[in-house]
Length: 91
Image (spheres, rainbow, N blue to C red):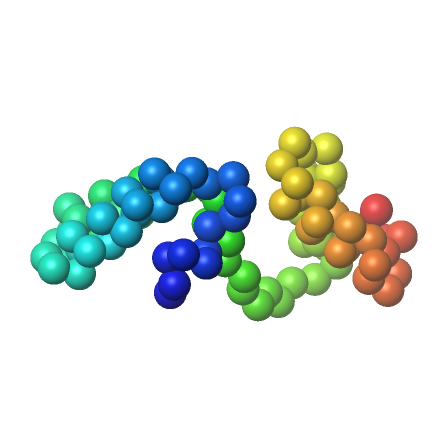
């Protein structure tokens, strides 16, 4: 992955440099300790996308858990759910 492209605009350049440092440490010495350092210091501003298979019952639960959340990412998820066919079953 390209460390210069995976962070959103709210992650500071210092944090990006720190992540690059931890990633290099892990590549040089792939121990469990270095892996955990990398994982636990990863900021929320890392943007990954993934394919997901679910159903309307699960989406309903997820939607209601996220609809009033403060993070903009949750708003994007809810707006996407609202565009689905039969979204009335969820919302």
